[in-house]
Image 1 (cartoon, rainbow, N blue to C red):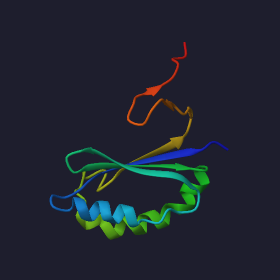
Image 2: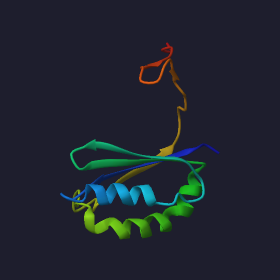
Image 3: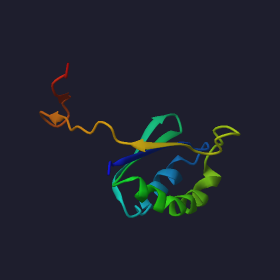
Image 4: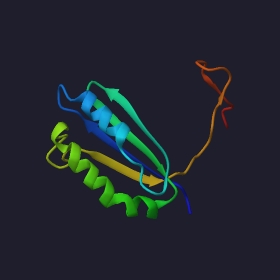
Amino acid sequence: MAKFLSVVRFKVKPGNEQSFIDSMKKFSNPDGVITRKVIKTGERSYCSVVEWVDENSLANARQQMIAYLDTIRDILEELSSELGVTDPVSGPVIVDEQGNVVTPGSSISGKIKT
């Protein structure tokens, strides 16, 4: 089975960024998580990027993740009436490559495939 990736976009209400970050750090990864990263994408905007063993792992963790979201929902801004407070997407990994870092702080080197 292919690995699976989920990405969720959040926008935090003004004055609540540290609470959001602290909560994200305390979150306990569900079974099936390979890696989880949270990135800052703009002013009060964040994305959670989670790599899963497979799609079933994500499906099995859905209730745990919704329960967690319910604990931070009050510090998140509504993105739209259709989306609510999150903008989630997920799908199978189709390209999975690692770069080579020459030295810490340097750019990633690699070959462009043609």
